[in-house]
Image (cartoon, rainbow over all chains, first blue to last red; front, side, top):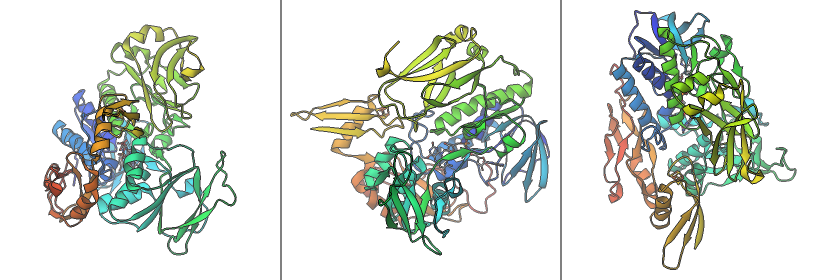
Length: 433
Length: 126
Ligand SMILES: Cc1cc2nc3c(=O)[nH]c(=O)nc-3n(C[C@H](O)[C@H](O)[C@H](O)COP(=O)(O)OP(=O)(O)OC[C@H]3O[C@@H](n4cnc5c(N)ncnc54)[C@H](O)[C@@H]3O)c2cc1C
Ligand code: SF4
């Protein structure tokens, strides 16, 4: 259990003890915050990583291939050494514009904490059946892939014997392998798009290694069963995702897992009136991870769903540093920021605003996703007015894999001559300017 | 011989084209970094993977503790290694890096705990 806090006032209060909250808290401490409190509804720190037992974490941060819990452990140990305070088993129910944080737990009932700066690090949650509307009966045996992951990897039980997985997201593919290794049968992974939604490496090491079929351009059109799932009906779909008549077939199974995407967890953020990016579902932030409400910062998957936890940690460090500065009164509230718009072939970009003045201190990383797979060489162009300010080439760009374009410090003066920028993804076959 | 494969060494997942000439020499293209060449060589001669799982814990704050290989293990041994892990039970507290199964199936690979896991009655704060 965590300690009982006498104090109610902290320089920085972080909501969520996942990798984002941990990195933000450590960074706040390292950047001069005297007292930092991290609050989480779970009984321990680490967030979702505690159930992500597979490898693949930390290649950027630690140059090592770590399992999720090991990546978390390193940050937990660092946070303890830095003197970060934790409050577990505690739900944050609301925050106010003057930075009061309302909490509720069994021991203290309802209690209020105050932060000079607040960091939102609540992570994301999975889309569920309600959000994708699969027709049919409502028997037991339909779960999100992440719920099943928690049952298998933390609570130690298998929720079924014969699985169908809907959605080719990473969590679904990783669970396909995990369940197979635990002795269950995974009949197939069904993906409505004509391309994989997760990383290609997971297609190889999670599905192909174990001969698990991937059905692209298919979907589950019906769930069959009374008390428990007995089968699902799978159909091919056309380009507009409409089931093709006559293509349906029933696949016997006792469990259907949904791996159909993640959405940032932002009820608290919305309710306090922070400006949101409607497409991403996270707060609009600048490159310092400041929201439009002074003293409120966003870290990790609340801002956008990152592919890699390494990028979560590095973005969260910036958020933690900003929060420490805000608490110390050295944060420039009005930095003269300008919007960054997603342009041609680009679906989304974070941060949504940049402060050119920040370039005096650090380069700025723009993280973006393309709107459709671009399989040939692509050039990303950051454009202000009619000038290309930054270019970066990639051998390809895919919606499932986030791309990072760095704005170098040297570009600072060029950005001062414009008041908004746009970023395009230009396939090079279409002609180089 | 010509083969297409996806390098799984890092999340970039480069698409490799691998050509083996008459003398067994490999030419790899499509790789973003040198590790891709190494991956192609090993994948064709002795394919290996990192594997992760869980083992039962007595008196721990959770029912199981996550474990993983400390280096890639030959693919052919994965299912046998999993069967061995199913029979293991450890006592809490567990420390990250504790060796749960040494030298699995004489492969030279150890299976180690991925995190600290406190005992159920221990006062635990991170
Ligand atoms: C099921 C699942 C599996 C995933 N698998 C992978 C993977 O294999 N690889 C990968 O790189 N990424 C994976 N991700 C993405 C993963 O979320 C991020 O990589 C990383 O964990 C994000 O860190 P975070 O700190 O932003 O969020 P999280 O790790 O989700 O942490 C958020 C924390 O906030 C707490 N919290 C939320 N709301 C409140 C509240 N109101 N009051 C108190 N506490 C609150 C939660 O309890 C949680 O501990 C997965 C995500 C999910 C949902
Ligand atoms: S070739 Fe290099 S960059 Fe490409 S997937 Fe392999 S390790 Fe990653």
